[in-house]
Image 1 (cartoon, rainbow, N blue to C red):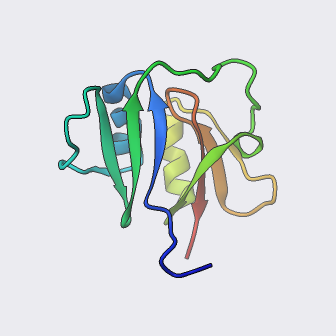
Image 2: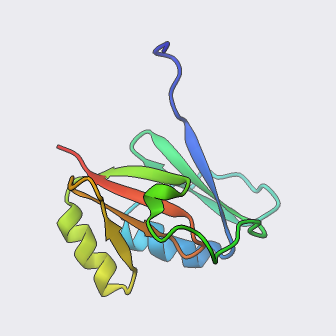
Amino acid sequence: MPEEVRIHHVSLIVADTERSLVFYRGLLGLIPDKQRPDLGYPGAWLWVGDQQIHLLELPNPDPLQGRPQHGGRDRHLALAVKDVASLALRLEQAGITFTRSRSGRPAIFCRDPDGNALELMETA
């Protein structure tokens, strides 16, 4: 693949930007990009290294019920984290349920407040 091709951002549909920021900023520690222009609807841009997650506050077309319990079987966003064990503790303390990777590697899967699946995998 050419070097100039890389992921710039991933967009997630959310119902309540402020509620989502409690999860992404508060629990995961992502930093908002204050340069987000007024797009005519609420949302937030969050830095993940030199890429971003764009939270778009719009009606969510995805069902919240009937999704696979394990997020690895659903479309998901994977984020590299430094310490899965400490993140798992923060998620538990916040009442966020998660499953562990079935492969045995240090990774957990959870859902954000809108049901978007996340894989949080420990990297060296």
